[in-house]
Image 1 (tube, rainbow, N blue to C red):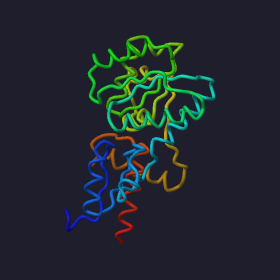
Image 2 (image 1 turned 60 degrees about the vertical axis):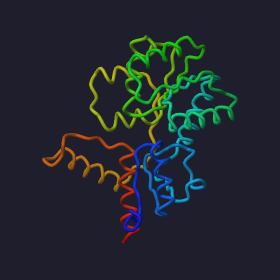
Image 3 (image 1 turned 90 degrees about the vertical axis):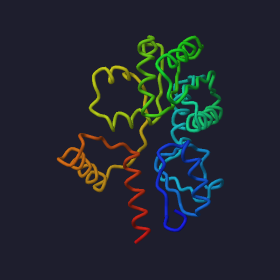
Length: 242
């Protein structure tokens, strides 16, 4: 790697990106990351780290604006207990404080939590005073939290659920979802990173659909904003090499 690597693309998670960034520094090659959104990953600490997506401060600012707009003063944060979850929620706390709001209760969960562990945490959440819940986790784990919350009666009137971009990515990639999966997330406010519509974007979506649903594909695979960022990242690197 020390003699042939000109760049590193990835990794998928913020937690791994912290480790790989040290390797990029040693090799002195750029690390282009399209999905590591942890706001503490910065070029100040890792001069060879280049983020090709938006960091979590953008969506946490949007959530804080929603909370402030509706006059809610306190929220509960449910999140994965790793670098991505902790640092994202830390950013949310800062943005809420700027609007004289706050996180009244933090409910971290292991990133690979079982249904029983999720239930234990959500029972504590249900006993807390606030009914505004911000869910910040991964696409693999977040939908399970909503499923358990529904079984506990926590998706009914009186609760507000705000999900970060993991949920829209899950919907985009796995669509069409089953009726049970859709039912579990009814009423949840979810954020999606904005990419302006364009002829290039429509053309790429069309080619992606043909690629994943044709004879060579392994079945339908939706395209999330992270997928678009990944494509742009590879494209930029290829052009740079040219």
